[in-house]
Image 1 (cartoon, rainbow, N blue to C red):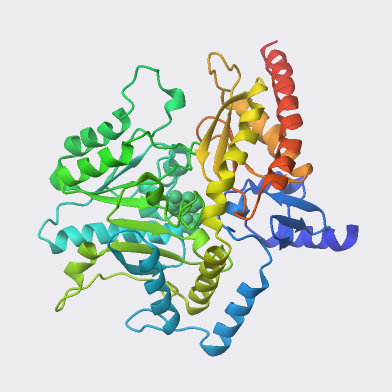
Image 2 (cartoon, rainbow, N blue to C red):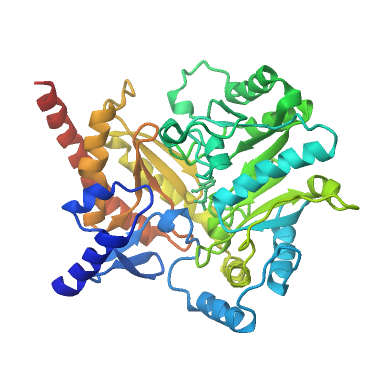
Length: 460
Ligand SMILES: Cc1ncc(COP(=O)(O)O)c(C=O)c1O
């Protein structure tokens, strides 16, 4: 195994620039090279098997290694490898747009394709501005999003993203981003009004002056910070606030659609109807890059007459091969009843994670569907969190490496308070949940012991 693998390692280390990666850390570590996938599992370059508890990056919803998806892509490449949706159309983008409109809630019937999530978010913001301008309100340009939220990395999407560490190095950002509290009730005092975070959106709109605000953008379950779920009635209150002030509501479902939380679209789970949905990732189960803005009829309407135009696009938005892959992927989700499967099994995933609450380091378990996070704390009773140095030691010094070494891929993150996050393929079930527990329990127990020693040593 040594020589072949080390050659790949050397080539990776010399030429590949990995995303969001401390490249320096590979001076004395191996690059994790994932070479093959099958169902809920992936295999590294040496053939070692890992449970993919993250669906790669919240996206391989139907699981790895489905040859029918590859066959759909090959058929499409042979028939029409590429044509653009700039001025033209092609059969697969038309069929997919219609299919999405049928599945999407309410009157979300018009689909603008992109190549991924950041482009979808970027496009939704531009569409919100263009919509207001077309209706005679050109001053509405701002967008409201939540603290710790992740909405992508292009300059517009980054402005919307609520993570200071990602934003600060690239200032100045696009003007017009305003940020409001998220729904992390684990960190709220018990007597707090459960809808205060919704009301904070109204305060922000009023502070900014409603005639300058174009849209509010929220995920059904917020990824950044670790699977923050909405309070009962949160989205209904936000919808009322948006309507009261003429502000559009965008549901960023780049993660929370295509069955991830048990519905085709996450907004259905919480019973609200946005003006636009942004999606990507699971739309193709990541077998090809694709994203979309799904707009309500009333949002599209001003652009459907005379010379009016939404002057925006990307060469590859709605690539025919990606659209063929998406259609085949939706067939699988439908045929195998994967939304229903998630609803039937989410309780088992949650119970397994909640069973870890006897460990002193497990502070909170939260999320919905197959999208769950465990928050790690120093002290369960006081909910005291780890400071930056401790968190660095806990996550990067031990947890992420140890979980991977033991064959479990999941996300460890401390952009908010430290969490471990799970988003398994929707085909996962009790067997995979048991495997996650078998790795997680001893590793979290050891993490607590190590942190107790580490903290007392570093204090000494
Ligand atoms: C909610 C949300 N929006 C947007 C994005 C950006 O998507 P992409 O990485 O495809 O550009 C992500 C990526 O994780 C996301 O989770």
